[in-house]
Length: 244
Ligand SMILES: Cc1cc2nc3c(=O)[nH]c(=O)nc-3n(C[C@H](O)[C@H](O)[C@H](O)COP(=O)(O)OP(=O)(O)OC[C@H]3O[C@@H](n4cnc5c(N)ncnc54)[C@H](O)[C@@H]3O)c2cc1C
Image (cartoon, rainbow, N blue to C red; front, side, top):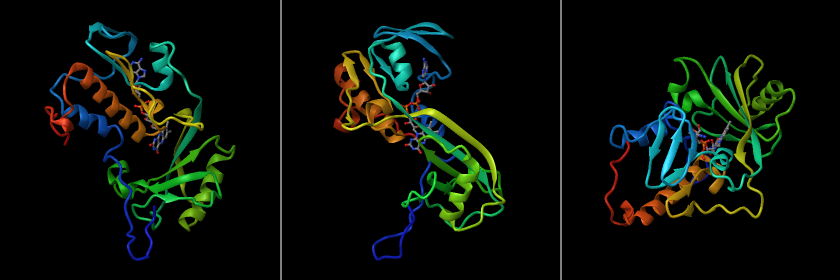
């Protein structure tokens, strides 16, 4: 959000993982002993003692934590609730010069167009764009308008206070099932422990966001440690090494 000149308020910068959101799981994995985490493995079936994979056959386990989206979780654990989903579209534009908002997240409080929020990502995280290039990333929540690029650029011109006729659309990613719907009354603390040895986490157990997914993962990890009789680090147990 942009700062204001009012006493007590300061302009703050948007904060994202440098290099892209994939950096975050990479850093978490790097804090564990080598070989602990295997990626690129497709799980075809799982229960509390065995995980069947496409690439490595069967792996034994003491507990199972399913950390997929809601649809994949219900395929592996039939009976899990599958919520309705909401679409999200993300557009990336380049411009001859960066709009003057610095590292701020620009929100449309007036809802005067399709863009919910936008930022000059090359200012927030320079590693996301080639040197000297400007990258503006904008998010449209819900069903996008048919003339997406034109209506988004018109809206961005108003939000940034600068003409956008010479901006170029680099990519538009639409995901019809981007986030689980949070219909009222929404329970932001859905259970993560199915039974001793079987756990499930993800945005569909919490709030539909990265924060919700991370928080549900923490709740699941604490439930696993409790069931295994291990005190979580913040309760005096042995802590894991800190991620870089
Ligand atoms: C376009 C878009 C924009 C978004 N913008 C924002 C935003 O600005 N802010 C925000 O907070 N949230 C945003 N979100 C939502 C956010 O990305 C999700 O809420 C979050 O990623 C959910 O995390 P998760 O761990 O629950 O699931 P996911 O991130 O979906 O991770 C689940 C993982 O499980 C893996 N998997 C699935 N099935 C299997 C299987 N059978 N075997 C092995 N692995 C499997 C998948 O490959 C995936 O890596 C956005 C989502 C989209 C699609």
